[in-house]
Amino acid sequence: MLAKFFERTQKKKFISKLKDAATIISKTETVIFIGIGSSGTFAEYGARYFSSLGEFSMYIKDWFMPIHADLKNSITIALSVSGENSITMSHIQKLKEKGSKILSITNNEQSTIAKISDFNISYYVTEEFF
Image 1 (tube, rainbow, N blue to C red):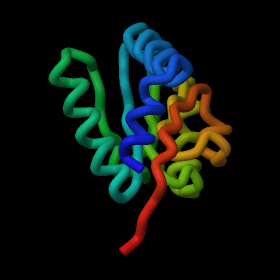
Image 2: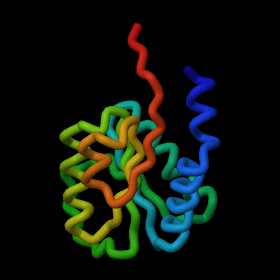
Image 3: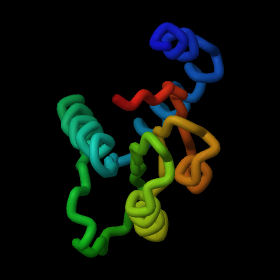
C-alpha cells in the first residue's frame, strides 16, 4: 500500500502537478492554509513550514472572524482527506469570494472539494480504520 503511494508520486502527471502548484504558490503574496481535524493539524504545520521558508503564510483556525481583506494575490491550500467536509467547503467559498485561488490536497480528485478548487493534488492512499 505505501509502496504504491510512493510509486504514484514518481509518475510524470503527479510531479507536473506539484511543479505547477509550486509555481503558483511562488507567485502569490500570501499563502493561507485551512483544514479541520487531522487535516487542520497538517494545515497548521504547513503554514509554519512556509513561514520558515520566508513565505507570508497563515493557518486560519477561527472561521467566525470576518474576512475583510482583498485576497486576489493569495492562494489557499485546503487540506481534506475525504474532500467532503462541509465546513471546509464553506471556508473555501468564503475565500474564493474574496479572490483567493484554491489549491486542494485531497485523497480523491472526484471529491466535492477537489471539484470546487482551482487546482487539486490527490494522493489516493487507502484508508484503514482500526
